[in-house]
Structure formats: C-alpha cells, structure tokens
Image (cartoon, rainbow, N blue to C red; front, top):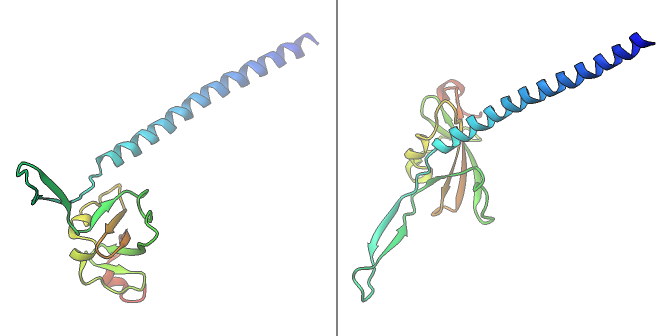
Length: 155
C-alpha cells in the first residue's frame, strides 16, 4: 500500500509539473505570434491624400483641409462600414492585371483603386482594402500568385 501512495504522489507531481511547463511554453509561442502580427500591421501605411485650400474667410491666416476623391487604403475593420457603399472583390494577378470575380479586366485602375494601393502588397500582406468615396465603393483586393494570362477569362 505504501508503494501505491508514493506512486500516486509521483504521478500527480509529474502531471502538475508537465502541465505548468507546457502551459508556459505555449503561452510564449502564442505571444510571439501575436507580437509578429502586430509588428506586420503596424508597418502597413495607410495612404490618404489631402489638399490644403485657402479659405475665402475674412481671416487670411486660416486654411481648410479638404479630402481628395482619390481612392485610399483602409483597414480591414473599416471595410463595409458604410451601408450605402457597394462591396466589390477584385484580384491582383502576378502579371499586374486587376480583374473582377468574372475575370473581366479592370481598365481604369487609377481611378478605381489607385496604383499606390497595389504597392501595399508584400510577402506578408496578400489582401488590401480600398475605399473610393467618389464611386461609393469599398474594394477587397486579393493577391493571386497566378498570372492572368495563364487563366484567361472566366476565373
């Protein structure tokens, strides 16, 4: 009976020690992953253009900042936040072609999502979100490793 009690105490102590060790290990791994994701998203730059225009007010020293209607990159949380904005998914292919779900090429990239927004793609970011206030659209642009010329129409 004495050996059984010692065995049970050893099993309990071993289980608790293993649990504490593994809990600490996986908490560290999870924190490292969280920190790396935070680092990646903190490096993303949101591009928004503004133009300063002189106000016609009596005091000539004041200036008013007016947003330009150019498309700009938004965070994933901002995507779809306006009910009256259309949500559109586009694909950015490896041969620098932008197309919609039907495989139709986007002809006016600059005035739709802007060429600057496409510069946001990198090794860690394969999806960007762009808002175009003039067209009242939010675009989700997904990076596709394939070439458009290889898939043709009708994705």
